[in-house]
Length: 406
Image (cartoon, rainbow, N blue to C red):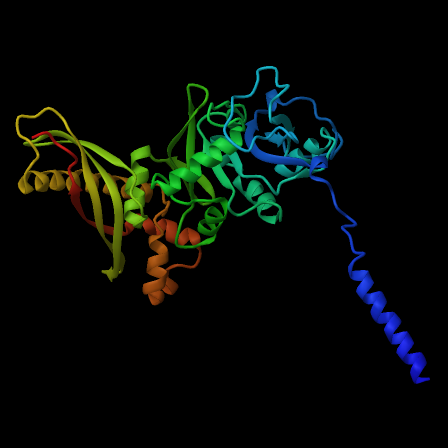
């Protein structure tokens, strides 16, 4: 009996070991058989311009919302996506590394189902890196868009969500000389803007996090096309009550990052001084300390901003910038100009009830009793944000003045 049990045990053990080498991916799908979506653009479609629907998800007599959106997908063509820079896509599209498909729908989910009906391979969003939406969408239909993307496990939180000046579909057809795949060029541009201090790391996950906080309003990159293929980071598109309300200028991105203390610095300032004429300075480092208090029942925040930079250019002037007094004059004039820029930006966001600086989160963290008494939802803080007193103390230190002839 013991011998029989040993034989059975040995047989079961051998079967268990052999089974480890027989496992396989029973549900695998080859990468060549997947429609990998690299980029999406979303535009609003006026009712009078909506095409005849294909009745993929509903029949024509089904009650559905009248609003429609246009979704343009940039799909990778297997074997044609280059590993490095190359020449632009051909005009006839025969050697293009991407296939651009445009569909319409009453929602993003509806449009994506219509997209699947027009392509042979199953669509996958695991490589989706850039989503561009038009201002019309950002100002009105963000709830439906966020709901679909947040519930989709294939969408990465490090995907870039951009707001476009004009139609978003333009960005799916750009042909930059530095990159054959438009989406990868836009992705590279945004990532390098972050590393060079030109833009905050505001991925779609960061946007959702800010949108969920009671003490902070969300913002997104605001981009535009210049000369058909040049992508311009045109400012910040910021939100209130879940909708886009306004945009900033490109230079105000640097002012926003200075308030936040985001390093490294990457913006240059071009201004005129009283004695030295016109100069240009470049900011290399940013550091910010924040203090908060409650005075007369209202929040008061103070930002102590410290910047380090270089004197990049000194235009024609009879007086050279070669002394500590001259550099001090440039620093003082810079401080005055940038303080005005920051105050104007803060005041504009207060008028729009959009706290993109996260001042409410500072009050919530350091003054919880005041927060619990006055703030019961996000709308309460967005209304109170207009009355917050903000003090800005700014100091620039010029470390280098470049080379000069002797």
